[in-house]
Length: 152
Picture 1 (cartoon, helix red, strand yellow):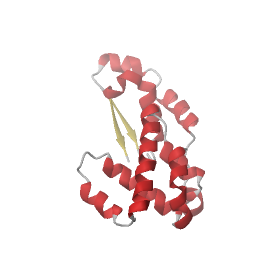
Picture 2 (picture 1 turned 60 degrees about the horizontal axis):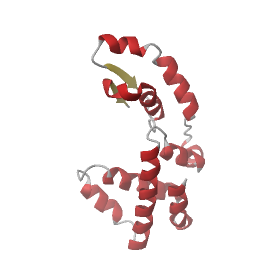
Picture 3 (picture 1 turned 90 degrees about the vertical axis):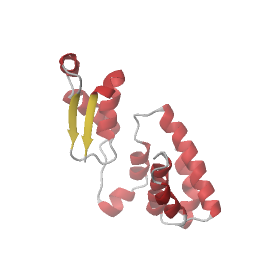
């Protein structure tokens, strides 16, 4: 992934999971429509100007990829590819294809439910990076606005 390749110079000089976590926080703040500006500025203080330029370039690459494929979990994939979760916290992510299969099984017949209701609700009690919700959103297609997901 291009955004991870662009973050590599920072990962060479800082702990990888710290760079990645900061990138995720800066990205979330940037996408918050200005509501997390103070969080963004606080996180940005940890990095010098050159490092912030690397972060911005990686953000642009990430957003291009995410816009082109909105139902793919690029961040979770990057986390697991670098073994940060496995080595340090024992995390394992369900492969995207398994998530798609499970969403198809879970929501089989949802069309008939939507025919008689304005919307349906779904609860994900262990959402992690949101792969199951992304798979369900992709499955619902144009009807995804009619499903209310609650994720923990």
